[in-house]
Image 1 (cartoon, helix red, strand yellow):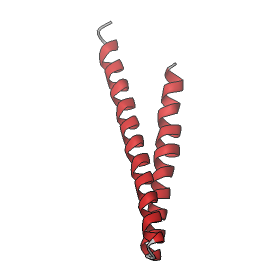
Image 2 (cartoon, one colour; image 1 turned 135 degrees about the horizontal axis):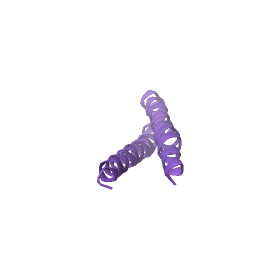
Image 3 (cartoon, one colour; image 1 turned 30 degrees about the vertical axis):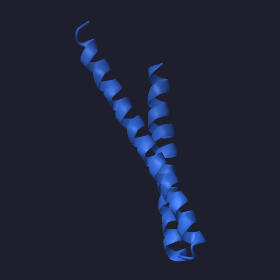
Length: 79
């Protein structure tokens, strides 16, 4: 019984870290996309397109790469 607690704690901590990283990347991607719209609308096309690309990569990594690929996979395998 006592060996189950460290394993459960380690798995829970791992899931928490994945959730925090996925959330941070997703929020950062949304912020970068919003900033790209602001720069593009102000006429600074180069910075707007660069921020749009960075925001897209961050959204892809946060939503698909970590949240869907790792976090959801680990949650469904544990249930």
